[in-house]
Length: 162
Image (cartoon, rainbow, N blue to C red; front, side, top):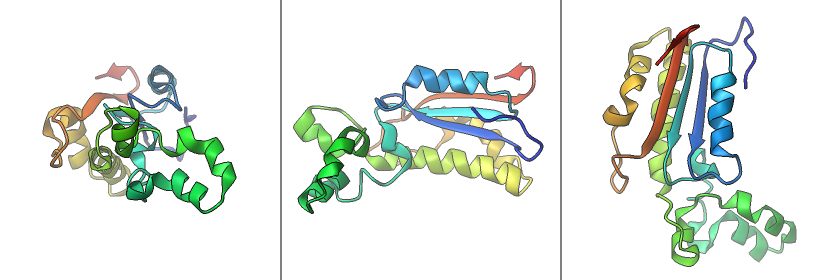
């Protein structure tokens, strides 16, 4: 968890409920133990560790980035298989998982991070104030469930928890 310093103005923790690389309850605990305010925690359901990136999308038709590396003769890539495909929807067919498409996670990342950045970098709290209702007001991309946002918590000042 970040340590409060004079230059740290805000904290946003993004997490995936089905992340098997970083323990979800540990992410929640780290957020709660963070002494920086304002602080926010947003999580997605049915996605894994890579939801903040495009690694599940890149090369999905070829079996993902790990398979591409293995096919290119990079044997060590096999050691990173669980990390390199954690939460990727292309696994649904072969592994029987039920991960959402990457666009569902990207929406949360873009919406929440833009709001947090605008608040600090533009001194504009307009978008950040909408985060309180992110579960019901965030636009949902086609193919993503209305319950994409699993949890949202915020503490805007010391002692006030929402």
